[in-house]
Image (cartoon, rainbow, N blue to C red; front, side, top):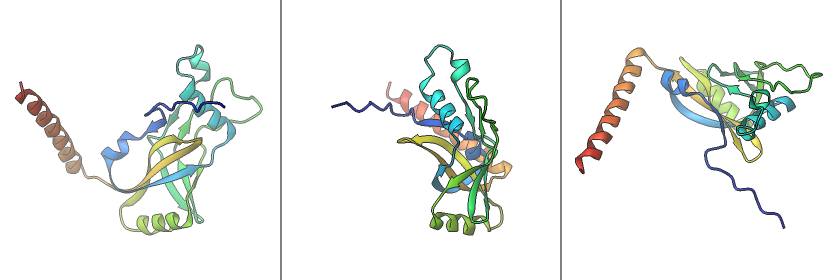
Length: 174
C-alpha cells in the first residue's frame, strides 16, 4: 500500500491580488474553477514543485493576477488580465498566449448572483487569489465596490493602530 503524500500547509497558493483589497471593498467571495490549457497547468505546477531544483529559471512559470478582472458575457464568466508566464522549456508546437482570456467555471446559481450584483452602480468582479484545491486550479473572485481616497487612508490608519496596539500590549507584560 502506498502512503499519501504529506501536503504542506500554505503551499497551495499560487498568486494573490493584494491590491484588490486595498482598492476595493470586497462584499462577497466566490470560488471558481479555471479552464486552463495544458501548458498553463504544467507551468503552474512547475512553479509550485520546482522551487528548489536546479534550473529554476528555465522551468518555473509565474502567475500574476494583479490587474485581472472578471467579465460576464453570454451567460459565462471570463477572467481578463491574468498573466501566466509559460515555461521556457514548453513545447514549441503550441502557441502560448500568456494573457489570453480564461473561462471561469461557475454554476448557474452563482452566475445569476454575480449578474444581479454587478448590474448595480459601481460594482465589479475582481480576482482575489489563485490556488490549488486538491488537483484543481481555483480562483477566488470577489464582488467589489471601489474605495475613495479617504477610505484608503482610514484603512491605513486603522491597520497602523492595530499594529501599535499589539506592540503596546506585548510590551505591557514586561
